Image 1 (cartoon, rainbow, N blue to C red):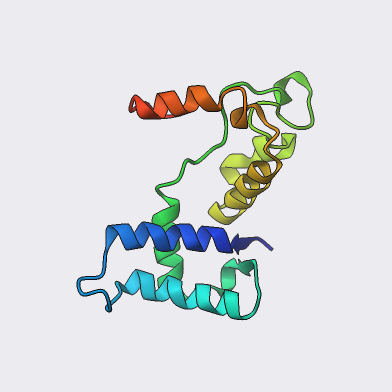
Image 2: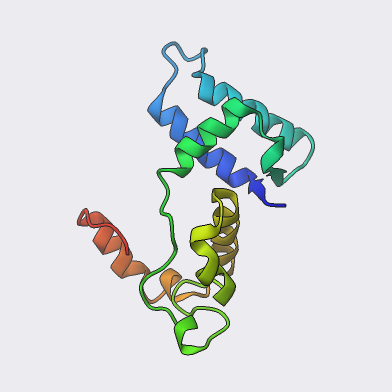
Amino acid sequence: MAGIHITDIEAAINFWRERSPSPDGVLLAPELRALGEVYAQMVFHHQRELEEQGFPAPAWRAWQAWYATTPDTPCIAICSTSQGDAVCKGCGRSFEEVQHWLEMGPVQKRQTWHRITAEGSAWRFNRYAERAAERLSDGKSLP
């Protein structure tokens, strides 16, 4: 079963902190409260991931709103799986992940993102990282 990583919870919390800051430094937006409760439980229980079905509905909706702002695919339009590689040199996904990407849910996609980011060996993280940063600073979206 796919689990949501604690760093994604942190990113979603930071997204909502920026989007709905506390008016008085004490009160929190409902999305922040929901995500904060999940985060606190994960920290207390020393969990790095939480199963998707274990998410309370308000926290799940808040997480999905954050997820909608993230890039959908790690693809940089240099796909070596089409050349027969088991793992794409461009994005770092396996052949199966590339083939089934559109069928994968958000949690599965985020797990793949975490793995390829941790490995850091794909071209998207070295040879083409500068080019991607330039495109983003120019206001262009990534492929």
